[in-house]
Image (cartoon, rainbow, N blue to C red; front, top):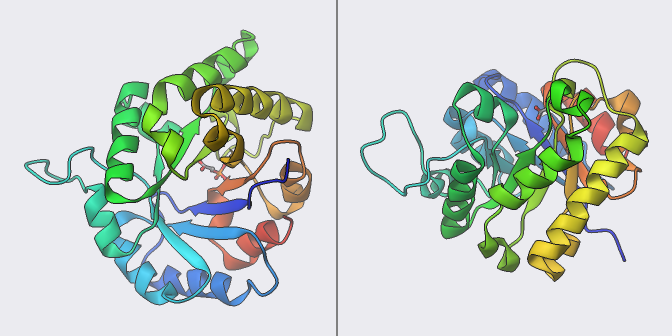
Amino acid sequence: MTRPTPLIAGNWKMNGSGAALAEARAVADGLAGVTARVAICPPAVLVSRAADALAGGPVEVGGQDIHPKASGAHTGDISAEMLVDAGATLVILGHSERRADHGETDADVAEKVRAALRAGLEPIVCVGETLAQREAGDALKVVTGQVRASLPPELADAAFSVAYEPVWAIGTGLTPTTPQIEDVHHAIRTTLTHMFGPAGEKAPILYGGSVKPSNAAEILNAAEVGGALVGGASLKAEDFLGIIRAV
Ligand code: PGA
């Protein structure tokens, strides 16, 4: 089967300021000849400025989280509709930092995915095992369980991607071996195909966790790796472009 168009998404997390938008513009300016889809997901307060700065260019803008409701008394939260209004087309959901810091469950993530679809946002749904789970031999069981419980049936009719991000590889400089990545990605593909049929066959499965220019080519060429979710290395245009050009 032909590979789906790869997606390289930068997750700025709680980093960046107005001045960092120059890095986003430098990424857009460096994309000549690149066939991958490229997205930058800045903190919520920068989404609308990033969308303005990148308007009409090849880089899409995404959010990092949403509340499941469209509006209401939810101090500090933002809705999918608000992200769309600010110019976002994608949203990262169920990142392990949200799951750990804010107690998000698979059911919470599934509700947020539904909210994203309601507003027309394309979700990037994150899954991944902890080191203890991997060492116990449970990585595949944990990850496929998260996929089954975090992705609602409505995705059968939608564009979406899944990001496999082993918790122990995020921000640590550690990465799984290529066979370990391929094992998990194959298991996710089998699960997605079983759940969603054709939509599950073509959804990109991104890898995330310490992706950098020096390891990007090997990771991105691994079987069933359909792109990358990049944290730290997405903050500098030069590093992010080095990863994007490895597709
Ligand atoms: P990292 O983060 O690239 O800094 O490891 C990836 C992520 O958490 O999305």
